[in-house]
Amino acid sequence: MYNFHQSRPTCIRQIDKQLELPGEQITANMSPLVWQQVESDRPLHCLVVANDGSNWATTPNDQILFRETATSPWVVLDGACVTVRVSSGGNVFCLNRTGNLYYREGISYSCPQGNHWAPITGSPTLLDFGVANGVLWVIDTAQRILFREGITMENPKGTQYRIQYG
Image 1 (cartoon, one colour):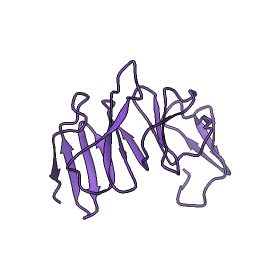
Image 2: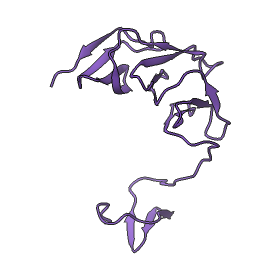
Image 3: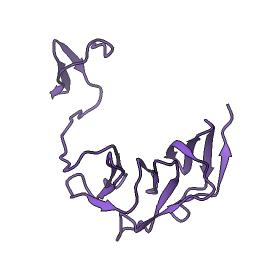
Image 4: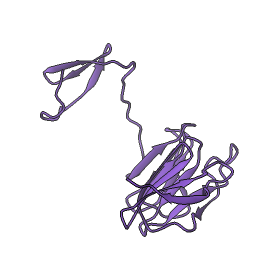
């Protein structure tokens, strides 16, 4: 078994469900385990793939990008953010450099990129966030962990923040 705390391998490639590293072999428990490079015409800072296969990204200069598939061209969206996240239900959120959180309105089957960003009002100034199972988790500048309940496609901004103790 390869110890990943040793020196970093210079290449990994799959051969019949076994990984071959320089001087080592790993038997993979998952199938298939194949990496494929996908081209991008610009540098990316953050990349998220939604359940429908669409891609949301930000660039180092805070552009927000969308594409329907991994091979579609990027579309530059309105706004400026450093991080974007997508919930399992398809809600899209982004955080800008000043710690303000936004959600994407107008996402539908006929308009998968939505039509504009709307602020989540009442949000403290944030450092980072994540979203899972209809709950938006945030870390604010006071180092508090908060969660926002009630995130749905019909109500992507949710209902209220609560402090997570512990």
